[in-house]
Image 1 (cartoon, one colour):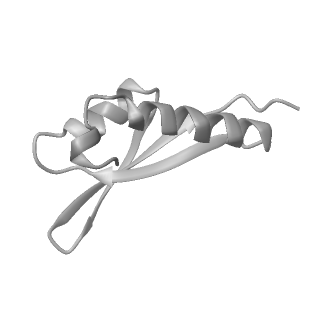
Image 2: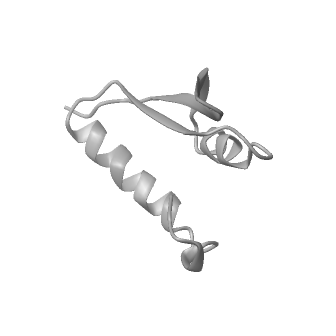
Length: 76
């Protein structure tokens, strides 16, 4: 998540791309992320648009969360 003043500047997309590159270079087979699943579901949809698949919904008290998975193609 990036701070609201930076919203719309694709900072999150660039950060995620850097994480994916690093994970691939280290031979990771997948990335797992979790996010808030409440509200209008915008944050879950954002991750899905970036290639993640929703894996599991969970709750911590009244907080709804979503686990997401992104398969990777490691570079050796």
